[in-house]
Length: 298
Image 1 (cartoon, rainbow, N blue to C red):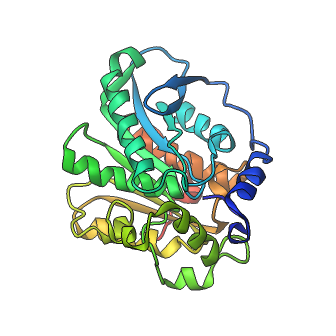
Image 2 (image 1 turned 90 degrees about the horizontal axis):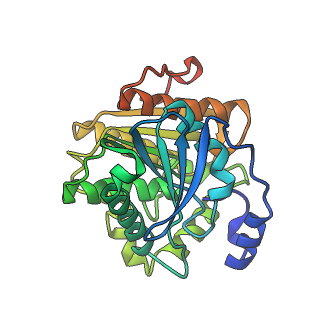
Image 3 (image 1 turned 45 degrees about the horizontal axis):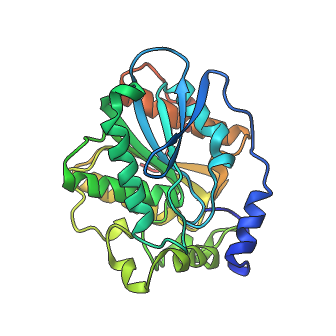
């Protein structure tokens, strides 16, 4: 999801505002960038080192409505360089023109397409992770659920960065956080454009917290922001994963607000390196967790 007073804007106004934003930083020189014409457009950040690389399939945020690939490019190039791994960013079709479940179907199609071309793309199919920020984190959690039931390809990790996971959530953070920057009204604006009707909010693939069974899912890293209305539902999801026998690490970033992950300040870069370290550990490289991020809510 984007940050700002979305609920007072039309979709067209919100997209115009988003398009005017300047990408927050340069592409990491340790990677190259390619655009692929898959079932939907896919932008790939490839480490310059030769050989087969693990894959992290990434879904950017934007409230399911806004295109934030350019804004998130610098942060995702850092993940690719420091994990290291190939990061494939999916430009799924956007709501409200394409409502639930179309964006999720696009993400699943992208995973299948990339897996079917693993040799050509230099992807190690035994090492695949999925992740996303905000609405993209919702799609990553939903894809992990759908993929578990489909059985292939096996996912090694899910990275959920301040995801919305429960339509109509009435948590303490939903009632009190946001600081006038991104609050409950903005969250509702996003859901209203994504779902075909409120009834869709009961579907676990729209609201993963409604899933009856979370067992058998891939390990998770859940990153939340202290002053984010979505904080509590994401932390509750991590707790439910652990109770279902799934390894789930949680980090609450002190002082942060929704949308911080793609910026260029010290807190954002530390969080990006935290994610890169989790990918590195999962994929078998020696990537230590940044000391400043070791203490989380888990």
